Amino acid sequence: MIKLPIYLDYQATTPLDPRVLEVMMPYLTNKFGNPHSTNHSFGWEAEAGVEVARKQVADLIGAQADEIIFTSGATESNNIAIKGLAYAAFPARNHIITVATEHTCVLESCRSLERAGFKVTYLPVNGDGLIDINELNNAITSKTSLVSVMAVNNEIGVIQDLKKISQLCRDKDIIFHTDAAQAIGKIPFDMTALKIDLLSISGHKLYGPKGIGALYIRNNIAIRPLALFDGGGQERGLRSGTLAPALCAGLGAACRISGHDDEHISTLSEKLKSLIMGELDGVRLNGSETMRYPGNLNFLFEGVKGDLLVKELRNIALSTGSACSTEKTGPSHVLTALGLDKKQMECSLRIGFGRMTTIQEIDYAAEHIIHSINKIRRLQAVAKSF
Ligand SMILES: Cc1ncc(COP(=O)(O)O)c(C=O)c1O
Image (cartoon, rainbow, N blue to C red):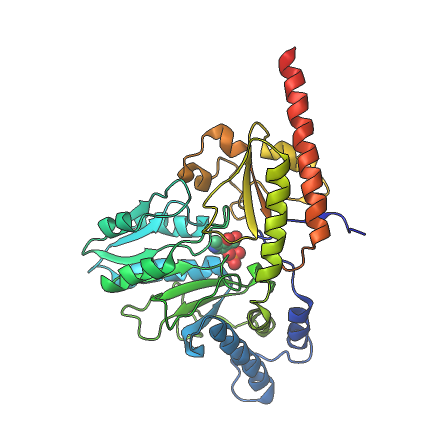
């Protein structure tokens, strides 16, 4: 028996893994101490929990524990990485480079820097959503302090070539940051091999709690970001404020148990893709077919508006785009950057699934999506014939 509604919006957020909740519970009840209280066992106990979690986050990406600072989520991590680094490098360097398809919190951080007088280059992407490394190379100047390129795109799931991009930045003595909110726990990271200096993590995209994230800062980074706000100097002076041990422990546990979903998600992805593409004409995937995280399938269904489809499929939680810019309902900046026209953008739909999704749910979703698209197209054909 399938339990309705079915959740297929895993890029917006993921369910909390019950194993994560179990680890968090003691810090919400009896282990309530302030992790920064150094005079008694309540504080020590909470601090110990935070430090275990810090090591678990570090272990997942091949980093050292002291290279991880906790934040409230990837939005905050991205703000510290981008604005904090830009201000630290100023005035010697006043230019940063990012990509047109980044998450809103990266783009808005860059716009804020532009208002403050910094220069920002927004690299375009090819039709597959990937950047051209030569264009990045050409955009770099002697004034460039930072390049920020996301790992996995939240709308279309494409994976940028971080190995090549980070190596280029290292060769040119430029700090490289990646927003890995949609990538951590989904694609492997080894910071001893990759030349990434700053990396942002979000708890709730990886079956952990909301309101927690982390920023990886390489120990020997050439320029250290400045703190964005003042306070008690926690998190190596970069992120003042009392840490939430329950949330830290949750993120740590989520990192510890991650990395075992690949086969399951690839199976679901192949099944959904073959059912939908096998049964329907006028369908294509937005973004690269090969360089993509399989748990994100962004389809373009010709002639069928995504909004209409979402309304039609009331028992399936789907999204036409990002949940992270709730105030904005205009066309997707990601699909615009891919070169889609307005009609094509309106006819695009993101289907996101993950650890808790079952094959029965994928069958149900495929059947109902196909049925609804055929129905809408039939009705449109009838309406046109009048
Ligand atoms: C790629 C990307 N970056 C950043 C964020 C923001 O993450 P958080 O909700 O942890 O602030 C999101 C959330 O959707 C995201 O998908």
